[in-house]
Image 1 (cartoon, one colour):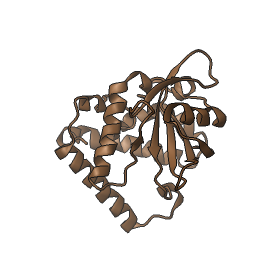
Image 2 (cartoon, rainbow, N blue to C red; image 1 turned 60 degrees about the horizontal axis):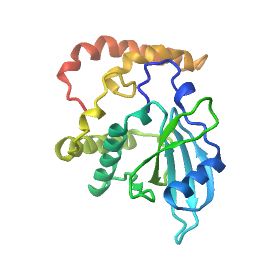
Image 3 (tube, helix red, strand yellow; image 1 turned 90 degrees about the horizontal axis):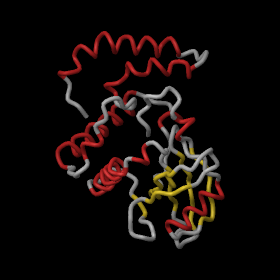
Length: 220
């Protein structure tokens, strides 16, 4: 995901591959024939759920990283290695299918957008399930999510080592919970949504109650 410093970065950096082009990418880069493919929701990357013509009908997610982050291979490599590490530690984490050259990712051109851009491409194992946004949550489910997140953070902070691990710490990254105030510039995206006032209130409370104490919290 891009840094999010631009109010509408996805319009400039998001890949624009069609399903046929994505299927050809899987064949050319990973040596697998796609028997079924569909687009998945995404923000500024592009994701496809694919099923390949192989014994067991394996399923994967073709992840095409936005052109901005694709210029930071060390960052993507660190992310990928972290996913592989978590999988070995028993967490439900996707892992990469290697390219025909034996790499975890490949820089490729394509898409229907203007100009010639390159995108980092990975093929990740598909994890079946239901997104939390589509289920009715309760206190127990939220507790389990929090416990899993805490366990994941603990294992990563105590055991994970990688030469480019510092690339994961990006100051103005909007997906970092410490940067909630940066979301002010994205309120427009909610339009007339009934939750707009609630979101604005949460951001203001974060500024007043969390920011002054931020230095006392453990960074994730």
